Amino acid sequence: MANDDPLRIGSHTFTSRLFVGTGKYKDVAETEAALVASGAEVVTVALRRVNLNDRAEGSLMSLVTSRRWTILPNTAGCHTAEEAVRTLRLARELGIADLVKLEVIGDPRTLYPDNEQTLEAAKVLVKEGFTVLPYCMDDPILCRKLEDAGCAAVMPLAAPIGSGLGIRNPYNLRIILENAKVPVIVDAGVGTASDAAVALELGCHGVLMNTAIAAAKDPVLMAHAMREAVSAGRKAFLAGRMPRRLHASASSPESGLI
Image 1: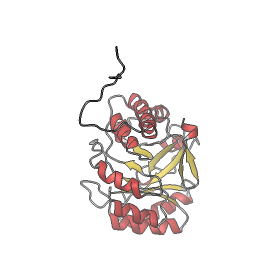
Image 2 (image 1 turned 135 degrees about the vertical axis):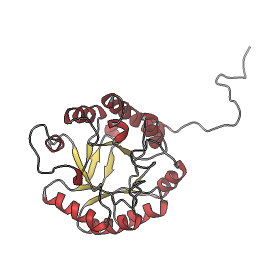
Image 3 (image 1 turned 180 degrees about the vertical axis):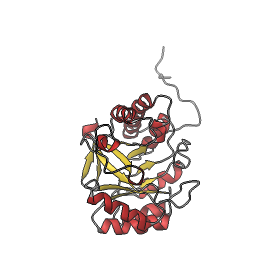
Image 4 (image 1 turned 30 degrees about the vertical axis):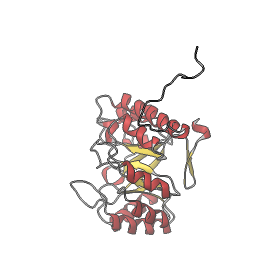
């Protein structure tokens, strides 16, 4: 079904709707095993937290630049629009920035994004030709403004980064989905496979995660579980769930019986 139901973001087309991060694993070997198990085609890398010039065998950069995945460089650790734009310009000079995740943090405790700085940076990056995927609050108005600014998708959080709390406000996500004309990818807060399935069942076009896989007792097994959950959630959304009813409805016919 994946080939018949591609995810399109800007000029990019993917069959997997699961995007995964590369941080918090015990080593590069575990990172690789989890990425493979996830079936993800897009992996995100925090530009300010890795050595971009270290392409030696066994390094993280040698893994993610092996052409097995599409790299989604992100601006984790940036706190102003200026910092984020400068970071992605550097990535472009190194040849690893086309599709980019914009992240501008406004609060160090919750890691909630700064709405104003995110929107400001998005406008600059879009004008410079980047395909921008902004991490943002689950705010329908902000998502609309980011879309109007030319972002190729919006990435509202489910819950604070690394919290594992799952989707805290499905109603906001539904409003965002009702109005968005670009893909909506849930980013941050997923804790387990059922959270990923719920996001896709709501109609979200994809989900991005890192800690939910890397912090699991068995990251590789969890990566495989997330792969199946995203697939199942998407199929359930396309199938259309049954109506919710207050009272029982018999599964077998009640008329015409002898």
